[in-house]
Amino acid sequence: MVTIAAGTQRRGRRQPEEGQALILAATRRVTRQRVLLSAIHSVIGLAFLLPMLWVIDAAFSVHASPLLTRPSFTLVNFRSALSLGAGRAIGNSLYLAVVSTVIATAVSVLAAYALSRQRVPLKGTLLVGTLVLSGLPITLLLIPIYIMYVHLNWLNSPFYTSLALAASSVPFAIWLLKNFIDQVPKEFEEAAAIEGSGGMRILWRVIVPLATPGILVAAIITFINSWGAFLLPLVLDANPANTPASIGIYDNILANSQVSYGPLAAYAILFSVPVIVLYLISTRWLHGGFSFAGGVKG
Amino acid sequence: MTVATAPAGDLAPGSSRANDRERFKPSTLLWISPATAILVGLFLVPIGYAIYLGFTNLQLLGPHAQFYNFTGLANADRMVHDPQFWSSVKLTLIFVIGSGIVAQTILGMALALLGQRSFLTVRMSVGSIVIVAWVLPEIACAFLWYAFSQAGGPLSHLIGKPGDDLLSTVPFLIVCVANVWRGTAFSMLILSAGLRGVPEEVDEAAQLEGASYWRRLFRVTLPIIRPTILVNMLLITIGTISDFTLIYAMTQGGPGTSTAILPVFMYIEAFTYNALGYGTAIALALMVIGLLISAVYIHQLRPELRRGQ
Image (cartoon, rainbow over all chains, first blue to last red; front, side):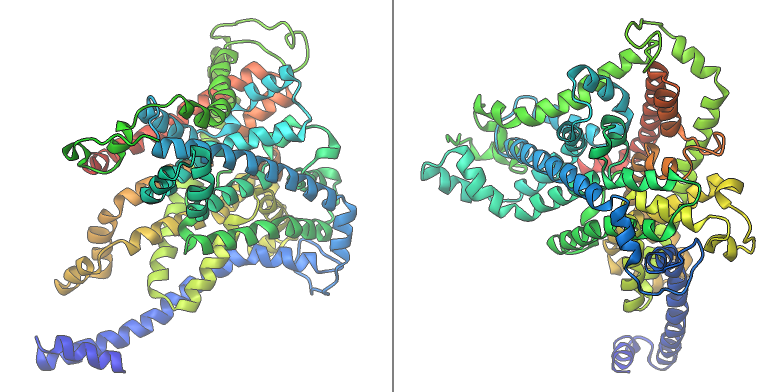
């Protein structure tokens, strides 16, 4: 009521009597409208929620089927998921994600710092080239990379698969980090330089601490991309012992005509929770959900 | 570290010019060499190699696995006369334009606009749900929709045909719906940010002139955030055009080839039928399509780009 009164007073000065009635009517209409719009908004949200409800329901039901059942809050499906190899596969996913994140972040920080602060020949061309590459999906380069890996004898090696995953994130990470480092005031480095610190020391002691949010966001984006990666590990690593969880889930969908929905739903949840947590962490670092825009490629 | 002191006049617009004044030090090459090695080794060399392979008859197994040769335009010729290729192009365009650009932009815009006016709790909870759908690993999304659309599954009950396996009856529609479900959050986030950037005074001025909500939306708000919408569409295109996991995990391109968009078609030709050379040619065609679509956006964005300089 207070806000309505204030609004009336402010605008009422122009059109005393009539305006007041008009604005009161408008406020009432807006409120009813707001309820209606909220209802529409909720219905759309519900449509998005429904498939997720199913997977949570199936994971906790003894007799999980494609239909919604009454959940029995059992952990039996999670135990079955682990016996399907979820534990080992998630471990393999973790290896791919961690190694590729370390490689991509380290390499990109070095390059981004040089591109931000030092004189690099053809800098403009390099920056535009990196931007173009960040829009080029590495899946399109799958076959030549596969043949290169055959010749280099790099197939079936989790490390070299991680290297390819790292490469797919490097162009975007360089761009993101260069923008972050550009915003770090130069005075800090100049002070450190006067004290006689070398480039590497300045990067480590001055830039890295000040650009931590940017570095974390770049690292988390790379991690999430590599964690969910499917096609590159599918082609580059045929050794069943190295299978990441993304391919583990796929193999289990295909394994037999009778899909075991409960354990697979549990498997999918175990595999999804880490990236949801990481996403929440990263939004805290960048104040708001927009942080990821442009980051996650399929 | 030597900081070159340039005359103040030369430093004028921004500090990037000041950086360039700095003397080139050979040590800089050390800083950028690891990234350069990765980008050259895993992007530039493969691109060059792909262009070469696209014109060969290389096979994964069989007579041309070891001793392949340059076959000129044979792959291009085969592609042009391959009805499967053209149906894949058609599916890819529907997938990218329909379930990507159009559906995700409209739904993302609807969610962003509703978010401006609905209650805070509704906005927060719907926003979180939509974002979780986007953050989920793609394979989890594929499994979810695979199970959701099985015969007797929730979706079949919802539409009143409980006996239908929707991945057999309307497979392409289901993968498109799954793609919209997964991708909309991205547009919602970008467009919400764009809408927040529209100055309130502009909308209030139009409101005082008595313009209706829809008129203000189409005549004032949308033109202001046009660059955001275009960039959003470009990013959706880049993200969707190479999408493989979602469709492959749900249908393997089937039944038959009814959901084989180009990346899936490429994979099947290369790794199921062993035609690596032909597969590479398909990848090149996909790259060309992607570049053409991107060129349209960049052409559309030209006024904004020019103004930005």
